[in-house]
Length: 367
Length: 126
Image (tube, each protein chain N blue to C red):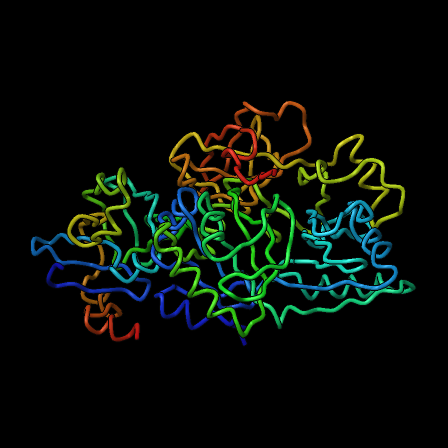
């Protein structure tokens, strides 16, 4: 049985093409992936991401507990701030990637991937033994809407956003008269907001945002464009670019890991060793040098030998080139500017290793 | 839409040109399901394929899909305009966005037995 978000009927009414994603029937596109993609880069788009998981963590030892399950230092996370984290196993492998928000004193919100919610909960409960902590999965009670694009802030003000927020902050507010939690985060590389709303108000809020957004050129955006947008911004997709056999260091996430965290966390020995010496593989950006498109699981070759595998690949509507993320051997020779080959339908096609992200991100807003 | 059109269950159409040659392309349904078409790989003229063999690849933003021969044949002409501007398939996959023309090399009647008239094909999709 596939699950439906509370906005399912809205998607159907808007003519969306629906697909199964992690057990959810979700809109993949409403009109055209390319058109929806450009709408988010140029104006503003509205996404239903209610399939994502919301887990509330509270209790006297919530900081100690969270510090055990992620490499980041949760004791340094301030009130109403958010931090990008990873849930690591004992070998440093990635169980999921998350955003953790501090909602109050000893009260945290963990937003996780729809495809990993069961594994995450299982792991969190197992690791909570001995900690005075409450783990409360509220995924079924909340809808999550994302408003993303250069005009997102202006639109949110029209809708009643009352405070000015930096990137990676979360605040309670009223949008279109509805009490919600608003965070300045997203998965597109653009400025924007994510709105956590009780299910019963999600349809009303969806309609209000689309209505008020008309004058900003808003469009509803499906998962197809969500994928190409995040790829241009070189943001990872769990299941494609991240898995339990990959560490945060190998995934290029070392920037998110503090070097001076004293507390033990799952996989710390492996991750600290890799922070010094690197992992077995590294994630690189590729730009195809012909019209071919590298896709998930296509093999990468260097000097005639297999050197890695593509994890995500698609056309970039903004660059007009075909781009990909790939894991290659942690070999110094393979760096920005190196030409490698991707095996596509039994033929080798040249690709250049390029800097990530593929586009200039515009999502860092400071006050 | 051309006359004398037959469709396969894998969404290719076969159109009889009336001069012992046939045109092959993707149905309007296939193109709509694929979404934005961004890449097309077609064989060279002269190549021969059996019914059911992969002869071409089409890619949308999301994924690559193989295209199969509805009947056996030798490629006699390739639509290079479609290769250079694959997005024309989204506009019209029959007149402008056809893929290849072939000389049939098998038993045409027997090989067409599992192909459907366009109306029946449409009905089957519902």
